[in-house]
Image (cartoon, rainbow, N blue to C red):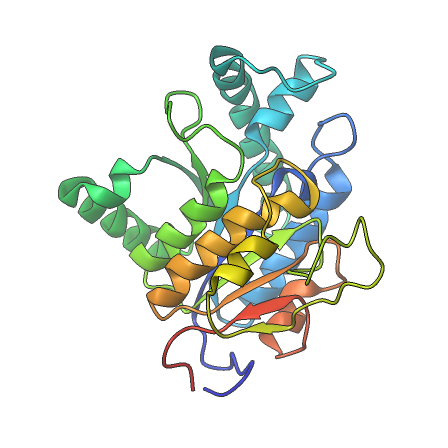
Length: 265
């Protein structure tokens, strides 16, 4: 493969963030969810396998409970996730069922990738779902996990999942266009990096701090890109709101930031 030639890509992990699924009140936005599902189904029609890593459970829970802001307490975040996870899956089931597409829920923790037995079980489950034509919808098990409740973990989760499933491509959809040379919200003179070939200290600094919204959220995306690229998996970070973004990315269009893995040809 050369450049953005994804013609031979078969298995794709697509990660979508909370802000790309919810409205200003943290409630699930039917327009955004519908757009994502339509685009995933277009990719499926191309004969590709899709594993969807979806944030949004905590946000959906907060919206359902009528909370105006994100609580700081761990127990409240976990309870919000418990409320929101069912809402999130119900919405996905509603939209995917319009295409006759079955979906499955997988709630994972780091142990599902580090423990040999659990890792093997995960791979076997993914294989069975693929054989049945089912799209896995994956989230971190926020209701019980403690050390990984922080925002941004699904970026890392998507990279671990891409590696475990031997995916051919990881696409991280966000509320920004990709990685810039600076903060686009603070300066009009920054430029979008269309391609990244190495992970340097300077690149890490561009990610800024971890944050739930905006530019700061690039920190964990860069970390995720490094994990995937070191496993030979190309990564693209792009804006979820882009028209027909998944199909265009697979067609090789220069959308978002392309993180080039080792040995990419």
